[in-house]
Length: 218
Ligand SMILES: O=C(O)c1ccccc1NCC(=O)[C@H](O)[C@H](O)COP(=O)(O)O
Image 1 (cartoon, helix red, strand yellow):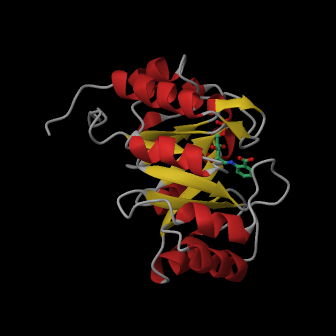
Image 2 (cartoon, protein in one colour):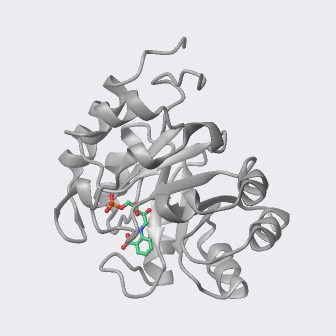
């Protein structure tokens, strides 16, 4: 039986932020993490200079996460150090060896897999990822597409895993109470148009996610 996650320790990450106003909406609502995209080709991709300004608005109590996909690890580290990120999220074919190197360099990590790719790992490979923080997503990240969550085999999931892929305020509650992830990650579901975050949609999403789980002791 998965450990019950309460609203006090539910990890909520809002990804793909591009403005100070949306960073403030996340921070004021008490999220665990905000995400800045550095993977090329996304409508949310930031320049390093802009990311430095936005990350400067994030207090130490909130993780500043850089999102990368199949970029050389030396480049990932260089950007992460310049922006003063706390956490590196990897969406490509990066290995456990890459993740361990990032840990040695002082970063927390999130390794993203599509649910399909995670299910296809061997039992031995899953064991390797069991102690890492993992994000389970749709095949195309940041596209606002859900996946068939019933395919997740709960017995083989890491202790800390986040649900992502097509989440929004109208579906997050049902998914949280059926799958028991440690937290959730959203991008498209808090946008008014592709790539454009909306502070009110961010607040609505956080409210809906918190409402889905019991209140913790404070
Ligand atoms: O956001 C992107 O465009 C992106 C591009 C390349 C790799 C990852 C990307 N986003 C990763 C995220 O953390 C998203 O929040 C996650 O995939 C969920 O996205 P959505 O389905 O849009 O909520």
